Every structure is written in structure tokens, then in C-alpha cells.
Amino acid sequence: MFFRRLSLVGFSALFMLAESLSFSQEKINQNCIIAKSGEEISSVAWSQDGKFFASAWNNNVVLWDSESGKIKEIYREHTKAVKKVHFSKGGNRLLSLGQDNIVVMRDITGSSGTIRAVGTDLQPMNDAVFAGDNTSVILPGDGGSATLYFPLRLTNQFISKKLLKTDSVITSFDLSYDGSMLLCGTQEGKAYLLNINDGSIKKVFSFYTASEIHPRISPDGKFIFYPVDNQRLEVSSTDDGKSFTIEDSDFPVKAASFSSDGTLIAYAVKNGGIKIFNLKSKSFNHFFIIPSSHAHVNSIAFSPNSKKMLAGTEKGLLLCWNISDNTRAIKNQQAPEEVIKSQNDTVKNDASPITDILLNQTSEESGESLSAHEGESEEISSNKPETEIQNLKNALEVSLLVTSLNEDYYHSSFGLSAAWKSYKRLPFCYGAGAEFSFAPPANDYPYTTSYDGIELNNPWLYRAHIYAQAGLGHYIKEYNILFFCEGRLGFGGNILFNNELTYRRTSKPTFCFLADALAGIQWKALNIYAGSEFDSSLGFIVKAGAGVVIHLGK
Image (tube, rainbow, N blue to C red; front, top):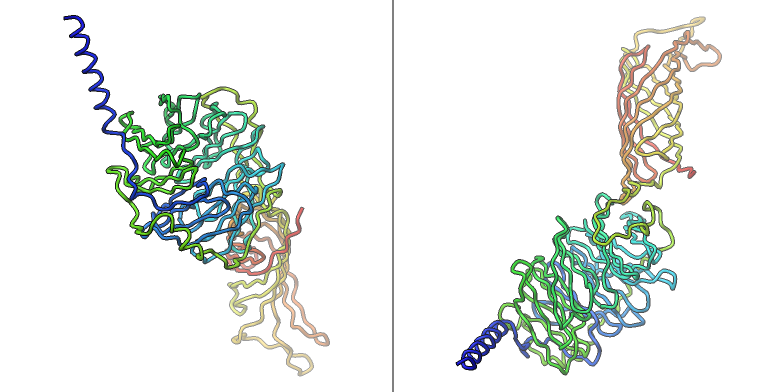
């Protein structure tokens, strides 16, 4: 009786175990194979609009149409194998990182040129990621610093800002979809979670560097995961710091990814399969088995709606399938082996203009090195990086003036203003200047002056002032625009003169004090402003100016 009960218990346990596994284990449908190649597929990525996906074969970057499954372009800018492909948030730029230490950012619409960053032995390009838009990129600027490079739209010159500095070589980047949270992994096994908006470091933790899985953040920025040893992935909330562990004897190798909605984690395992873990239920939803002849999965990517999965293997198999029912997700009808052959002539050969990012020119520095932060999973804050170290230093402004006067027979004056300004302490600016202007008499001037029967010219009004100024400015580097408002205090004099030498006549000078309130905009070397002025002899008047700015450097 005892053995009968024991056998029944054992049979029930085995039945329950088989039932629990049967719902999740599925062999990849052969119709889901998009292409086969003799080259290893090192990376795959899906654009955020869902129109395209990309894959990397050897030193080729292949852009696919996700609807038809056909190759749109093949790019061959790299001299060595490509190890990462990545789309910008807008979907119109595609980044690739090669073992040749080069990062290439190309416009897949062809509307703009190619951007390139070339690393060195001292500045290795271990990873790169777009920074929340189509043109800015985060690179390891000097190997151990996360540096944001963004272009001035008008000059196409790249400006850099150091976001984070560490004492170890940066090996990986990952960014939330909105571009606000950056996760950096380093060679020494430290990872930093940085809030880009305010410069604070939310979390520092250690991860297992022997794993080929890098720390990753979910697109919504709510979770991160990282390996802690040979059999465990740690999943942690970025809000409250609560965490749990995914333990698996088939420890993830090479590839792991969050789904686009942040609810799933897919990772490749040693037997050639892909497991999908549900963060809400904390259980496995699926276990997809890749044919053993195609070895391990190198890269995984989810579609924007998280319903489809893209995978590339060591032996050149590119697959895409619907997760829910394991059916074909791409309509490609060609034999997978023929896809590359038949479309190999689609290579992008057009010579688009190339802009190189100069990695050794960093205009903005972060605060201090983070080597002092040694606590694991420790909530810390760093000093906020300097908000803006401006390109602007000192400048000479020369402007043409127009002033509306309150005098009965002098309606407007015209003149010239020259001022020196300092922008070293923006948002505060200060300086000093001088103005000279003249006002011709109006047509209805009622008086005439004569001498020995000769009628003299009507007198003109001349004004001259010197002043000191102080104000506030907001400089937008990306557009090279400065918005400012300022106040001026000064003194000067007004005089009437009839513009004749032989029969010159002048009035007695009138001394005055003045106070100005002005606002304006400066774009590149152009400057315009307007405001009001109080002149103790003329009362309140309106003035405006436009001119040029000559930057004097330091």
C-alpha cells in the first residue's frame, strides 16, 4: 500500500510538472525564419515606429522593411564586424558600433548626412546610444566618462557635455525611452543609474562582469536588470528599490532584453532557446527553442507593441515571430537562403556628407569622479552638473538706434551705440557703453533763424550718453540663441546745433540722467532689442536697436 501511494504521488508530481512546462515550450516555426547567412548575426534592433528593423552581419548593417520582409538598404561603412545596431527615438536614424572602434549614425531617409565618431585605444567605443532624439548621442568620451554630444543645428558643430565620470572604462549604456534615465555599466562591475534631467545618481550597484549580459533599463524607466552570478538575474524597481531574482540553471548567455512596454524580459539560454519572463506575474510565459544547428542567440529585440520578437543567432539565422501563437510575423515569401543573395545589390553606395564628432573637445564637465561611491544598491545623489558653461565670454556690441521722442518738433532720433558686455557669469550679464544720436527737425518746425538777412538752417537735436548695464540672459547652445533683458543707468547731455560752420548756432547744453529697461534676442552675430527709456530732460521715450556682436573670447 505504501509503495502504491508513493507511486501515485510521484506520478501526480511528474504530471503537474509536465503540464506546467507544456504551455511554454515551443519550437520555432520554420516559417518565422526571415533569412539565413553564413555570417554571425551579432545584433538586431527594431525602430520605434515599427516600420523597420536592422541586423548586423559581419561588417554589414542591413535595414529591413518590417511589412514586406525585404531589405531596404545594406550599409558597409565599417572595416570590421559590427557589434551593435540601434535606432533613434524618431526612427529616422540608425546607429551602428563596430569592432573597428567607429560609431556611425546614418539618416535612413537620406535627408541629412552621416555622423561618425572614431575612437582610439585610449578612448574605446565600447557602446553608444541615441540620447532621446534623432541627433544627440551618448558616447564614452574618454573611455571612463558618459558624454552627451549634440549638434548646433545651424553650424552642424557638435557640443559635448560630460554627464558622468568614473574611474573605470565604460562598457555599456542603456537609456529609457524618454531619454531621462541613463544606465552605465563599467569594466570593474559597477553600474550607475543617472537621472539626466537633474544630474542626480539614483542608484549604484555591482553586477557580474563574467556574464555577457549587460545591465539594462526598461523603456518606461521603471525597472532595471543585471546579472549577479552564473544563475541569477536581479530585477529592481527604479522607484522604490524593491527587487527580486530570476534564478535559472540555464543561465542567460549573450542576449537579454526588456519588451517595449516594460512588462517582459526575454533572454537567451545555453541550450539555444529563448525564455520570456513576465514581470507582473513573476513567472515564465514562453520558452522558444531555436534549432540546435544554429547555436546560441546573440541578440533579441521586441517590436514597439511587444507582440513580435526578433532574434539573430551565431550561425546566421534571422527570425521574427508572433510571441502569443508562434506564427510568422513577417510576410516575406522568399526562401530564407536567397534573401541576402537576391538583394545584395541594394547596397547604399551614395556618398553622403560625413560629420565627425571630435571626442577630445569637451565643453562641459560634470562634477567629481564617482570612485568614492562604493555601496551596493545604495541610494545616493551627486552634485548637479554645472547647468551651462557658455560659449559666450566677452563681446562688443555695435548697434543702430531709433528712438521715438516726445518733443513737439523732434519726433525721432537716429544714432549709434557701442557697448562691452560680459557673459562669463550667465544667467547674469553686465557691461558698459555709450550712445550718440541725432534728431532732425520735423517738417512743421515753426521757427526760422536769420543772420544778416541770410536764413539759417533749423537746428538739429544731438544726444550723447554713457551708461552701465546689468541684466539676465538665457542661452540655448543648440540654436546659438541668447534671450536677454537688461537695465541701464547713465548720464549725458542734449544740445541743439544748426549744422553750419560759418553761421553756426548752438543752444546751451542740457545735462540729463537716464534709465533704460530693454529686452532682446541675440542670434549668432546679430542682435536686436527694444524697450523704454526715461530721460530727465525729455521724459519717457521708446527706443529700439539692431546691430552686430563681435565675440572677444576671454
